[in-house]
Length: 109
Image (cartoon, rainbow, N blue to C red):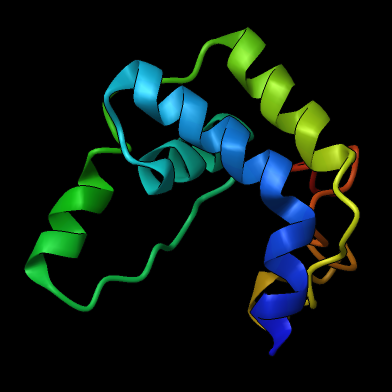
């Protein structure tokens, strides 16, 4: 139910991730993981299979261009939905790193 409400409202972000993924011959997940890395975060992607873990590794060894990061940031900032806070994505000094996606996405106090 939660994702049924969120996904339609972040469609522009998914489309942006998809366009970048297609242009770079990467998956959307690889682009999303790389985006987090480019923003100074340490993502911890899930993997239930060896294939998924190998796919996650495809996010390493390259970086998004500055304009790709800016475009993802812009589209994310204009999203109409706030993601539910995950307690594991919180530090002692910030209310949350992933409050889907604030304008200062990735900044840690």
